[in-house]
Length: 204
Image 1 (tube, rainbow, N blue to C red):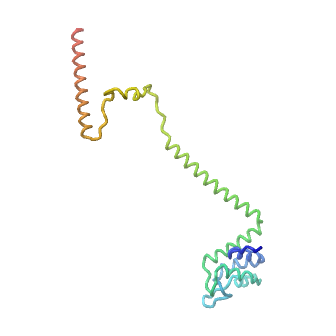
Image 2: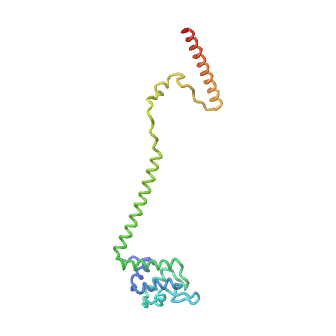
Image 3: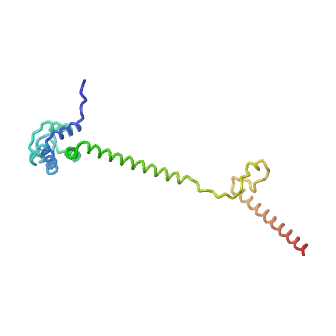
């Protein structure tokens, strides 16, 4: 069965984990103090050095050819050049995580990662629940006070002229109907007033 080929990042992580602890510490410090290059041991033009030489100069004198091959493969080095900031930061993060796993143990790191993921999921769920509760509160109509009246639309819908004003589509027609209704109301009030006055004279 053919073995699955690991990607360059996995190879670099494995190479970092394979180095002695003092070499990793020296490489981490050397990468922060020197200009790092890829594709060569040194680059006189830029004055940069490879991570292994940086480790050697920082006290970690260990020769490990597998790291050099993994580093060049990870950076896709075709000629000597300065390493990009992303490449240097990636190498430093691999070294830091390797040292952290060694100090705390693989299980502790995995447990910490699981706790972080669980906290993120919980925060996302809380935010979603809060949004749904807020939306439900906004959609909820305020309670209506019972006035004792009942809706008679179904009962009176077949009765002629049961509503006080028929619906209109034009404003000018609506205004005319309002004016006619007000005039009719005034006439009704005048008639009621005259009837009350006549009743008072009879009683007197």
